[in-house]
Length: 382
Image 1 (spheres, rainbow, N blue to C red):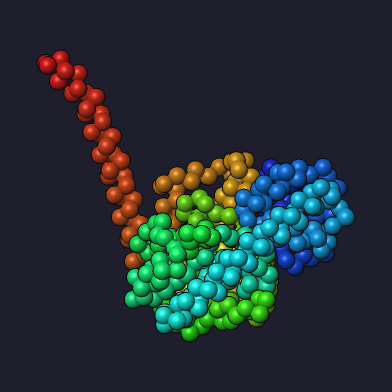
Image 2 (cartoon, rainbow, N blue to C red; image 1 turned 45 degrees about the vertical axis):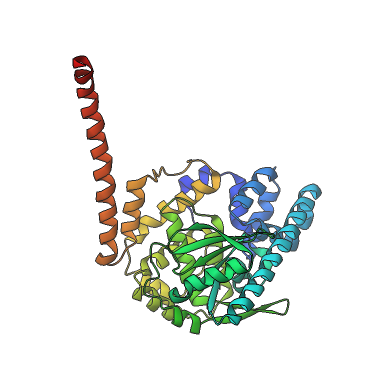
């Protein structure tokens, strides 16, 4: 973990504890740091609330069980154990529902790609209980989008939202939520990712004798980075997003980095990939291979962006702005968006959004000012 001196001074020990405890392969140095922190009077209520909010509580529980079971208060350990088992049971119910959906769509001859949620838990952690999620995300081909909605309705789901690129459904009895996608996201960062190619690269993972299709490790990494960037633009990042990236890299030592770099280069998301890798390295000390470090030299502009993004994340973790001041307003987020775009054709729509926003903003200001000036005159005449 290599944070700025100002950030380190400002951080309370509970935040350090959380950052150290969310890795699945702790080093001896990290274990020693956790031992030192456990000697202090930690605010466990604060740790639990923040970890739960940022969806990393299962990882903290796992590390405490395996390495520090006798070093935490019994009442806290019992509480964490109860919460972990409750989360695992809920995740298994959602996984079981995914199995039913896979079977139903297979019967209808509709290929689907499950992603996020249980598939990420299985691929990255090999344990359905080590990730917090509350819904299912399913991608279908655009031509099957309407039929897929019909199938979900027949299975007892009702549509709750429609964003154009995805629909939100909820089951009438179980309450399980399903997000049905025809695109990965509205920003179309995956525009050049062909559905059939993604489908052909699917891998199979097994959990409790269930065979679950998952994105390949390379495609999962790219999607995790894109999803992180999407939430970064609206200040809604979770610490779990970077944890997933760091832990995936640790678990897949033979990741095909040349393929990852090539695919992100083809769809204009290479800068997003490298930003996420650098943030992961900054917060968790993630080891990056030589081929990635070599490519990073071609993006020197990211060096100034990494501290800003790390501070944004830490601000969100702490729930208050106690690090470098980041406004995070509309204009700031759009500028950040532009800095992560590599191609002019991807930047043009953002320029249009900025112009449109400020055109309406100042038009309304002018109308309001003119109204304040002429209203007394009009009323005086009346």
